[in-house]
Structure formats: structure tokens, C-alpha cells
Amino acid sequence: MKVHPHSRNTFRFRNITLLLILLFIAGSWNHNGSEVLAENTFQIFLGPKNVGYLKIVHSRDKENFRIQVHSEIEARFIFKYTAVVRETYEYRNDTLIHSDVFRKVNDQVQFQQTLVKHPEGYRYSDLETFRILPISGVRLNMSRLFLQEPSSEENVFSDRFTQWIPVKRLGAHQYKIELPNGGHNTFTYENGKCTSVVSRGTFYTVRLVPE
Image (tube, rainbow, N blue to C red; front, side, top):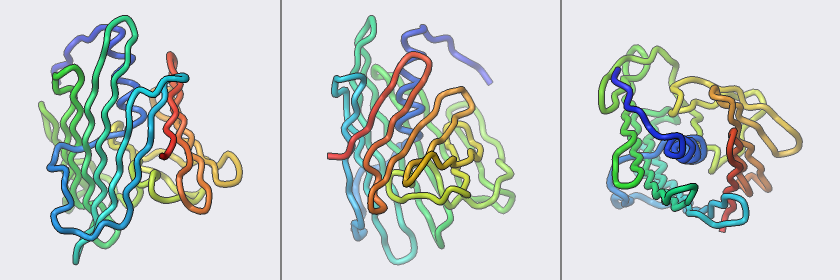
């Protein structure tokens, strides 16, 4: 697979979008007549500054339910960066059957990925390649953590790293996801609802707070 070089600043900013907003989709941003079950918006803070938002919509039709995520970020390190992230996840019988993820930084597409349920796992494709991921049916992925509190015994599927990651309980209604690249995300819940997400990496700490 061909790897394109990026500057250090671009890499840091991509980390923020990749770790935090966790894989989002290139698809139409509408509900297609489905019943909307929940709609939440999180404000994103880099230090004390509000740098963007994440909107997540949970909807259902007769057979499937769908999670759609739309996020926009504008931040400045040495240069100004803007990022747009969209994701769509479709489930049937509580199992992921299709997902689309799209990410654009400074008007350049940085990431575009699709997963489709396959008899041997999932068919993965991006801008340059495709392969079969031999994994069991995905019931909990990172986007669902914004909608539901997990149990401490569960694993969560990371679309970014295409692997299962343990969910570690830190205390009452607080959970930590340690990412393979050394970063980690902490989710906190109250009455079953996500009340904050903190993402820490080598060069930053980002907080997501619901409106």
C-alpha cells in the first residue's frame, strides 16, 4: 500500500480527528424517512477553546437501525486546519452489516473506508485496497459508545484500527479505551447517557461535552 508523507502538524491534527471522532462516513446526511430515536450534539474543546462539534443521530426503519455521525473541526497549530468527518453505521439484528467512513482535512480527502458483512467476516475497502477481515459480527463499535453505556467485560471494535479493543472500567460509569497507538479515550456516563469523552494523545487533550 502506498503511504503519502505528511508534515508533523498535519499528523498531529489527523490524530485528533482519527482518535476522537473515531471513523465516520461518506454518505448522505439524512434520515431517509426513518424514525429518529436519539439525536445528540457534542461540543469539542482543545484546551479551553471550542474547536468544533460532533453530531450523532440514531434512527430506525422496519428492519435496520442506523447511526450517523457528522463532525467539523477547525483548529490552529502553526497553520490553520479544518476537518470534516462523516460516518454511517447500519445494523440488522443488532449486528453491523455496513459502514461508510469519510474524512477530509483542508479540502483533501484523507480517509475513505467501507465495511460490508461477509460470510468470512467483513469486506474492508479504502481508497487503495480491499481485503477480508476475519472477525466475528460487530455489535459494539466506537460510535455506539456515544449512545450506550458498555459493560466492563465487553470489547469494542475500532474502525480506525480494524480490531477489537478491551473496555476497561475505571470506576462507576466510567470506561477507558486504550488505543494501539498509545492514545486513549475515557467515556463517562450518567443515567445511561454519555456525559463526557476525553481523548488524550502525545501532544493534546481533547474533551467532548454534550450540549
